[in-house]
Length: 478
Image (tube, helix red, strand yellow):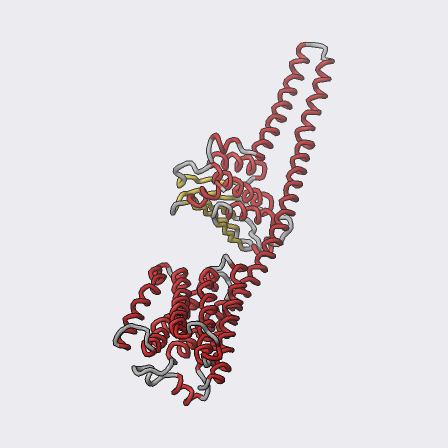
């Protein structure tokens, strides 16, 4: 090809490579949390350096007396050096991304250090020595494509394929699909950029080269390289932008959930205040009013026997008021939980709740051998409290069982009843009872645990709570 034709072919190819490097470099800072983005700096560097290679080749083919390029005799060596650097950058992109995806592939990070001496050895074998002759530099260009570009594109393709599992696990199948296409384009680039090379007097460059490819296909290999570079840019940017869009959607959803939770928390606080105020008014205030009335009656007593008789009623009223205040204080902050432990606190609450309603609650804690961290016990108590309250108020059950046991480095709690059951999905969207379910799940999730609710109409309900102690300890410190 003459110099004019080379300009028409290599300049657009270099421009595509430069645009690839620039586009990727601009996109990377927006996706710093994505493992792929940490390796993309190498691919951006490859785009910049290899575009320089193609443009330097254009300069190299021009008549030097018209170019005014200083030290033009060093230009072939500069082209070769830039080609080796761009090849190493491509290898490092694939190697670093593959190592970040596969734990056992950590040694792949250093493959570039092994390929460099391999390239020098290959160059020495094909050229019969090392030096700065035109033949050595020509062979260096060919062997650099074999040694760096072929492994680089293969590693890059494998690395993108390894990302599919990550995106699928994150619920992003379309991005995983784009990773597959990106890997296919890297494979195509490996053929047109790594195997289609300048002609040389050794195999396979003597057979598969620019000349034979042009004669067979009718287009220069650089045209297909440009298409491959454009395809890589398209799919890599598509992956990054789809990931960003998915993150924005998840952030909006999380923000909506946070607003909903904040509203529910405020409503719950108001409901709790109303409940406390109602109990104080209907129970404690009534008892104190009655106590005050009887004290006034006591003042008008005419005999000692009358004083003694009325004082008995005063003692009863004071006892009832004290018990009411103590019960309310326990519901707000169960002192027995700190003093006596989780099983005793649950039994006390179960007895107080069940006795007036004819509900039988059996608490089995034989599998709970040791005291749990205080924040874990409080979470379990609140969840069981909410579950038993729901059993008493809504299920119509005659019997409920609470089982506490330690298993697999954590604690498991079961709350079962023989009540009417309910539709779990319908309950989750209920403004009244859905809040209790949401609060239970949130309490457990903060400690790294899981809450499962199994219920069927007329078949009772089973709530399973599991909290890993190690994760709960971290959650408690946070």
